[in-house]
Length: 287
Length: 315
Image 1: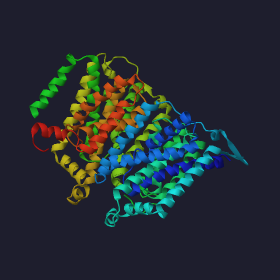
Image 2: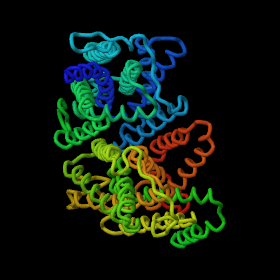
Image 3: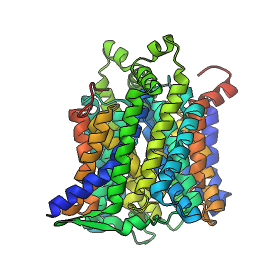
Image 4: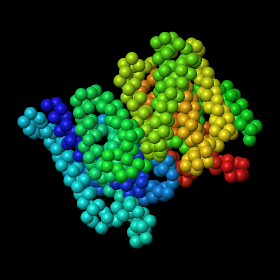
């Protein structure tokens, strides 16, 4: 029964992990840049939800729209001002640049909000529903629903709208996209913005569930890397499935292992996948 | 150029006589981070293999020396080299897996991060080595226990470490080894096509680099008298180690030292001035901005530009 309960909470929390990883994989898929500041952007989404909840009394389950919009602007700006200049540079330089952005975002949060763990209250986060022998955390259920809906919306955006198709075209063949007159720079900036908006929304959605502090961003980044490597860098389906997998594994790990040992497990899994199948479960080719 | 270097060393040797204890402390940190940066420089700068897990070597080195000293009373002067050797073993394992399986760029970064994090979590969970609370070393002031009443001794040890690592790098740089590493960094496939055993030289670079970094762990532990898993194995320390050589000029002999002279006082002073107001992160914000600026505007780091300015020729 503990197993079932663990798996259920894992799946429900996994929706948010999936959304976070989908954002990372979108950015990587389109411009081959790994967003090392991904988790730190998510933490800013959380703090924004916190500010909206404490300052204006907006419930985080509504505030996620604002958080996503704000993070879109941040992502768009980061791409335009910084990432765009180093797209042709060696990967090491791109990684260092994004590490710099991560340092700035994390520590600005530290300066602004201090090191104490924060949590956003929502009336939903206290409610639970009993389904026979297992209980469902309403907050997790709503987070899962909204996150899955957003992931689906992103999928439809990429496959059903002109801008989404252009984005995939630019990801597939930048030169070809340029030849047919695509404004690739704009597409890149929008892709980065959308990727960041994913964690903006994800951040607001987990803010009532997960207590957070500025260093949380680092572990969220690492978790997103785990997920996209497991799912395959650049694969949307891989990120979605990988998010659920990692979350269930973490949740089951928390049932059977000490909390800190579950991290040990996920890092060991990461090393194994890096060595055995760096393309991930759904990736088409290795680096 | 040579007599300039000798002059600089002489000045550094004489400085503690005139400096106050706070300035001495800052210089100790400058040398120590310069040393760690120089050690990283071998694999990260010269060979171009971006390791973001070097804190693991500091941690292994420090914990080994501390445990040997606390449990068996073995002097850290010996423990230091045992720690370095164990760090080199870990470096060899990481290097073997990363290089044999051909992990490059982001994938290699993740591998190094994952190993460092595994070490951190493992150490936090083993109570025999202090667990999450870490280890504390009682101050005895006994030089045989790597402890000194006079803070200036630490100054000279840190300076010696930095100069020794720089000497090692200077030696390697002039030999084939250094040339091979540069070839691997610039174009690995081409180096391989020309007959360079890239695996062997990357492994060597990793082992030397992790050994030196491991030596630094002992200094860290016995200078601060405490070892915490998060501080000694964590990603923040790995980033600190990388920052200085990148800002100063990765893959150059003096880059890490220059970087440390630029960043360490900046960090310490901003910690002093902003630390009390609760603005703990401000110096790291500055580091981040600097890192971004260096990548965008000085991708080779500061050293090549300074050199061009003084010597007048392209490096």
